Length: 351
Image 1 (cartoon, helix red, strand yellow):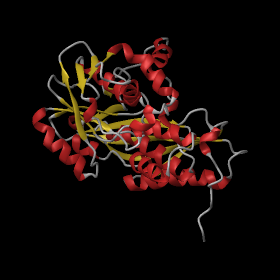
Image 2 (cartoon, helix red, strand yellow; image 1 turned 180 degrees about the horizontal axis):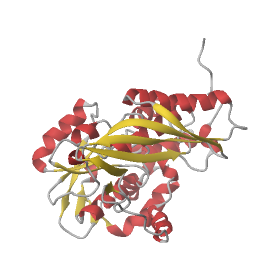
Image 3 (cartoon, one colour; image 1 turned 60 degrees about the vertical axis):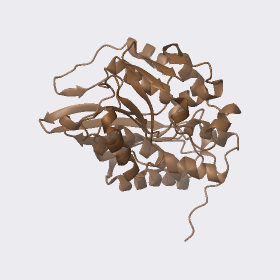
Image 4 (spheres, one colour; image 1 turned 135 degrees about the vertical axis):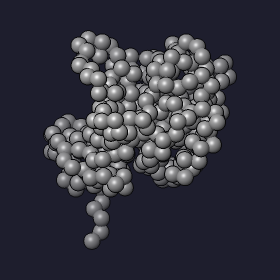
């Protein structure tokens, strides 16, 4: 039997934004959270909301801690199966970013059931299921609602030895910054909406966004890896700034060393950017210093919202080879050293 044809369906037309680009801007989110009473912080809650880390971590005993996270969004691509796969990969990334191993997931599903055909919805669920199968975990349940826009994601549960836990804070002066995936996903998604992304570019985008951040497990075992996060909706600068603030350090980035998807720079120069890029800069640009040679389009790349982006690693200089070898072994050929941490007021300098 031939596979069902969903080519006439454009999922992105059902949503006002897409992927991690529809996250609430950092400054707006901080304003919302400022009025929320502090929650209980029991001694065994190793990671909560204090540094905007990737997942919550609760210690069960000396050698086991539960890692819990959730992530969901509206369509970033038109193909239903690809949308489901990207959303699931992105949700599991937060588990890997803690140095943890995923155990199982619950599906979070909101669909305009009167607008989307059942076959398209099944394809979204199948895409997520296949990614979880690749990760070696089941989707053990979930929750569904009838919503105005398609929404899909996972609540993911993992496990980690507290001794291997990696937070987004803890970087040390002189640590190198390693980025695991190239930037440009938000730019590619904007190009899709403008019918400007050719088939080869789309293949590059899907390959990047559905590549599980499995190196996080091995990185969790390296003493020289001092901090770890993943780059998603706030862009490289936003998530690096969270690392700076959590570590009470400054960071420097060499823009030329940052890996980029093949068409990303051209799309940025042409203005094919998402609205989230500008909102990101408005939220944290005051903490970033750009060298005079950095063009507006290059700034847009650094603030580009990444959906299922790469791991961002802070490691000792003598751990560089081992970190890059872990990435290479897991198939992350574009992992690069892009900068370093220094003493100073938390902030970023880009040259």
